[in-house]
Image (cartoon, each protein chain N blue to C red):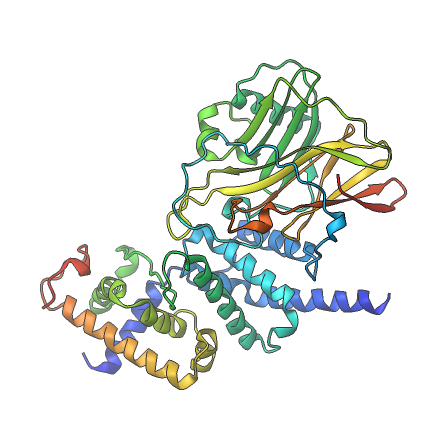
Length: 279
Length: 190
């Protein structure tokens, strides 16, 4: 085979072997591309590092281990600016509230997987961000929350969730409800966690890391925005005097200090005015 | 509308144009280099860099594409820096599949594909990268050179060496019996 023939055939063979031949995006890919676009525009143009006096004292009170979390990862985790690994590719900064029926179903799945009895605690917050459902159930005696992929809502076998990515927590000793001033909020919980996302190459064992916050709002507060340390603004769900939000993050580590950084809040009032607060 | 709002809108408009015109090609570029499940995240990170450095993105679409490929390559280099410090970013190929699609093709081309698939892992990442930029990513020599941060002449030289090395590997792995399922690297060089 002469050189020219060899090169021509090689080009043809390589194109046949292209792992990413050019094709139009699928509907799902298009949806994720649009979600990413929205997330990028939601980041501030310039890094808006809050003034030191504006930084709250962080109470990173617990680092929960999810059901089914993979073992300690050996591979380096990339400090993706948007964070969270591929698990949260569809995540959106603005939550979509669930219908009452969907909220009830999510709460039922949450209780089932956490294997806790239904003591009639109401669903306080139920939202969807991209392909993930978050539900917070809270009563005087017990409180629990779950973060799970939408397509697992309704599956009642806990084993499914342990394999597929699920994060939840439950306590029979909830924090006593604080009474924030009318124009303030009180953050009662913040945590970092991860759901398992199997990876095969380069980013092996790269769990989908996220951060989440919960708290109580004053009676005049109608909206809460979290300014995350990674620069994204996240709209929290606010209902029944509570707020909650979560966002894709990265594995907290000494090499990833920005993940551990402080976040701040802006609260919105009924008349549309806003105020920056520390939570 | 004040000028800040207008300028912000123009920025978003320009970013939208870049995003829409380059997204698919960038996704392909990244998919050739990382596990497919992570490709969209890397693309997201590249696009975030483009948003933050919008003024640095070349106006010409083709040049903008090469600029974004260069950013993607740097991000991929950085993610693996802790493990090894290869300057080049390796490129993977699809598995060889035999199927009905082979039927209409010349047997020599089908065989050659098997040979290339076997020889590819023997190439250095430097050479894989040069060939892929030209053949798969569809860049001109000056664009590929811009991605790598080298001169066009240096790129042409590298590409020529890479093609020669690939041919040598193909020749050495096909000199004996053809064992398409066997790893080329397991064979005794002939």
